[in-house]
Length: 252
Image 1 (cartoon, helix red, strand yellow):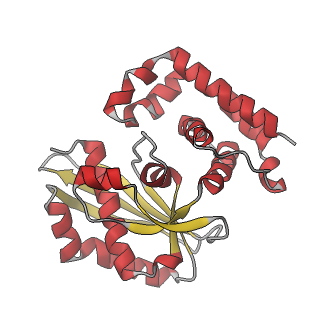
Image 2: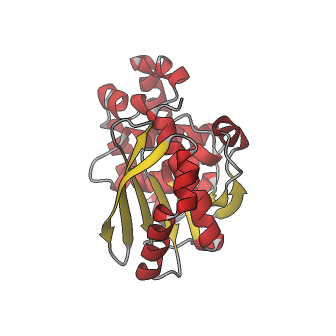
């Protein structure tokens, strides 16, 4: 039986699979937490899935997403995992951002919230590649392989610095994700000037996050086998310090 986090993840993977059959894979790329989870072996689940889109009009994208969410093949794929779509609404539809709010049900349980969000703010100008989602994840859920574009570790690293710097509400997950990316070898390339300029603010925001915020925002979204380890304040303090120290070394 899937847990709630796993059910949302299967929904995301199934959506990517069916959306990629309908829309040219060259037109969109997965970013954010799902990028790290699906391609960089992050231990952190994502409640929402974020993608960049290019070339496609607002009306066309909405039609494609709505068609996938309502298609018999998509719903049957979910049903095979005892997942059902409780509701789906196109909550935000602007020229830069299109967002769907989703509620899914696992084996008749309460609705579980998720979002699908497409952005046109940056296009697909950064480093991205077409790859298969991590095979171990696909095997765990007994799914067919999922192929889609996503951002490289270095691109994700730059995006996370900007997110940490610019968010209205600083998120502990950005610090956690930066550490994951650093451990995977990201952050060794010289940063573009516009990203480097974000570092002082990113450091300031990173220093403002406490252990309680980390526990609430990240701890509950980790794989079960890692939750006890990350309940330690010492572990968080060390992680936070390493990220801040690395950012300080990159400061202009």
